[in-house]
Amino acid sequence: MIEPGRLRRAFEALQHADTHARACWVCDLDVLNARARRFRAAFSDLPHLAAYALKANALPDVLAALRAHGFGADAGSLGELEAAAAAEFAPAMTVLNGNGRTPEEAGWVARKGVGLVNADHVPELDLLEDAAARVGTMVRVGLRVNPGIETPGHHYVATGHEGAKFGIGPGEALVAWRDRARWPRLRLDGVHVHVGSQLLDPGPMARALDGVLALAEASADAGAPLGVINLGGGFGIDYSGAAEFPLEDWARHLIARVSGSPFAWVVEPGRWLVAPAGALVAEVLWVKWRGGRRFVVLAAGMNDLIRPALYGARHRITPLEPRPGEPAPAIVVGPVCESADVFDPEALLPPLERGDLVALHDAGAYGAVMSSNYNGRGRLAEVVVSAEEVWLARRSERPADLAARDQTARLPAR
Ligand SMILES: Cc1ncc(COP(=O)(O)O)c(C=O)c1O
Image (cartoon, rainbow, N blue to C red):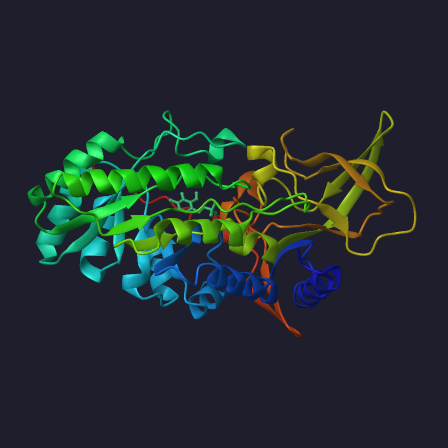
């Protein structure tokens, strides 16, 4: 969580440069650096690649900071591959994931090289093989295995259960590894599991680990030893601030369980690193009373931070300068024309007035990256704070930016 004083400083600096700014994202690089150091220290005894999941937050300053701490990059699309390359992550430390591989992605990895591509299913291997053959290169590939493991929390972030769209069954993966000579341009010796996001209990990760170790043994027995085990991400944060994912305990368990094993290891943390390093700061536009209830209308909405509407997530909301008075119930909403545009239906907040600033905390992961232009709203500026410095890392979108893609370009009939 970022200190209110730093949030205020960031917002005021932005308003000085852009008098129309009524909300913005703030990223605190000092918080991020502390978490990055802690993550690296926890896993330091494991020979591994920690590939940061760009999908959580791909702000160039975030990527530069994490690269400097020795993280690699986990990309899930062509855009994220490009973002990782622009941030100068070494190709060998870049992993490509995703369940909708395109010919363009396959061509990109064949031409530019990555450390590992995790294929979501077996026919994708033909696409990767063709792309590698065209360039005359080799691509290292893992198979995403669906371990059939349930995880607690919202079902939208559960990815390793039987009904999930990701990966293939262990039996199918075993056949592909055994028959890997079918794809001579692929070094098909990896397994990838990612049971889900936002785990506070590492139990499902431990079960997935047991499963992949058994699978790797079965593959070796079938004459196809594996070389790399990718355990995905999922390290959660407690948005209420009451508890936390037992990172060091989990790392100790993992290291004790796999020490001396012949594998290269990959983990793909996203949220744990960046969520507490970000906040959404917004002005109170209106305080409206109806039927005895207090609605606090913010200048940011679900198009900016969709997690509450999408997952029922609750971010702590605090005024940057609390007014005197007892906290009382408030329904904190955005200005978007949707009843789902509610950040917290049962917040407890001190008195608030128009123009006050509030922060929605722990919004550094799956925040700005998921924002949209819904309701004709420009995406918000992203401001970075570090020690005594504040800078604008991404400007806000103006109405002209939103119109910039519109055209009437006649498409020739074929
Ligand atoms: C394959 C994969 N790896 C890593 C992550 C990062 O997960 P988290 O941010 O929960 O650590 C995700 C997120 O969905 C993912 O799909």
